[in-house]
Image 1: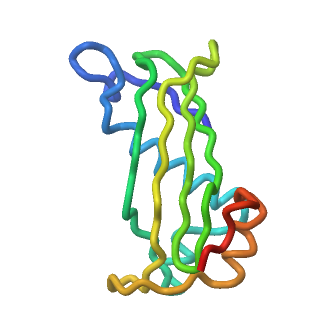
Image 2: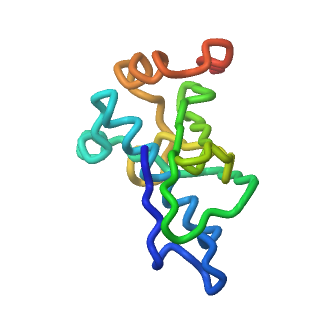
Image 3: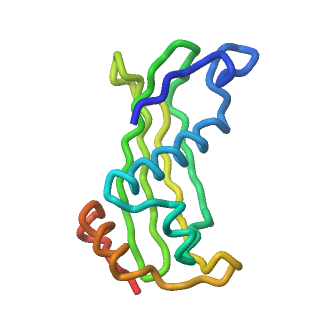
Length: 137
């Protein structure tokens, strides 16, 4: 997924504000699911709401106003009621790594109670997940 960096994305030094990468990760996860036919709004209407329970970011180099970033996203771990998305953000023109990170999401019923992932959702996610770390319970 591509992200064009605008002035509003940057801090007073002209560098992308660190917290914005979490927004880019969120967009990339939604994009990843939609590319596989999973609508986040449709899942919500059906009673499945994903909540972030852990996020990690490692900043490698700065991105600046005018850059175009590529956010690569994969499912790196999948369990009965959660999934972890791994993200790598690179500057498009140079391929320079900007940020690496991950986010673990729990599946809930929308009222905060953890619930198992629907089998159809698991089947879709398994196609993109690391085969050695699938379904740990």
